[in-house]
Image: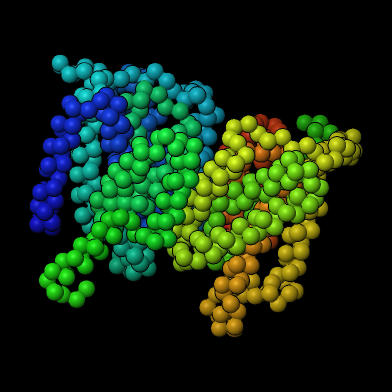
Length: 321
Length: 289
């Protein structure tokens, strides 16, 4: 395992150094896009955590929203500092997942998709319906920016960029560790063979619930990070269309390895930025990409890279594939 | 709520029940036969409505001809989805479902680019007479969906019970392996199921086109209710879908009249959650989803 990690350091370190010097040489717009990009990476990665059990929930974007709403409300109405609100947002998202998963855990496959979609929609409708404190259809505005800490003003893009990047790296590290532990292996066992997993003493229900809650926690953190930069949150953002975009990221990147979702977000956000002039037909482009991937590359880009690499190295060594 | 309002609401609820039954029966049938869920089913409904808009409101063709054409076009669309998406992704529910979500985006953009985004399309009502009943007057075009649904779904159930091909549909839904040993071609049956599903959705879309705001995102409004109906009724069960549609139609319409549409949506999702906790396989489903 440690060897595996050392191999990654060789390309991770230059990448992180690159990200550290990048904001000083680009436009503010790019910095803002990068901040969004970091929150999306946490979101996509947390979604993979839930998916390792085989549960592709369609309420993950709403749980991301729970984090955003909680964080926004706490800092706006109670003046709680951002350092406390973001973790609380994650915890609340996790609790909401605990409630949502009670009926959800009785379903699997298609029933799970639809029930999670409907229950997520229920949470979203509560935001639309309840004006106090959620602000109804218009959502919450004027959420305070993070304060000054010493000489550093976190309401400015570049300091926030570093805060978001630090949070992202920290969360990714945590999720990587969870993925490598017995817990992560149990989740994968549930996906590959639920009955075998149960006979090995894994409580399938509890482990699925745990995966849902863990994923929701990290999604909530990402939501909090997003809302403090945007300064506003509104229920329309968290509908099923955004959820399908999240699925597209993860499908394109693949879930075979830990790096798949990160790759997926990077590729699809690049496509997103490149298709700005084609705003009206962009959903069709994303839809086509999704169909092509699901039919021809159902395991995503990371799996394709693994296979190409395996073929390449076997050819060099002269081994049969 | 006085009697007149109650009768009027009941008539609307009946119409809504029939509409959701026509949408959900096809969805459930297709799921039963090939274990695949079609997210673009709402877009099928929308495509039926747009066919009526294009042929009847723009083209000046007879109303019923336009509706029949809509059902036919959407049935062909269903066949295309079966061939192009569900066959290549066979055995992977997630892939089939998400790929049709991608297709839904494509259909929406196509319709939006051809007929314009934004404002709803106005479709004149073919029958301006109101339908009078016990002092309440109900829109006649809205009531028309009730006989249409009874005839089409009744016909489908009759077909599935009495005809060889319909019995083959049920056989494949029960056990595809045994059915194929008996000489039933699975591919033909799944194509038939998707054709029926598309035809019913297109028919319902055409009938409701004069009532709904016809926009490219119309399908988005009906797909979640249709899915909830399929889950509550029991996946793969046609009769269950009909029963759940009636429950859904009445619960949704009455709560909308008394409170508002947002509360109504919350209530039906809550009903779904309760059904899943008490009876995960749905009202008439055989196995847990």
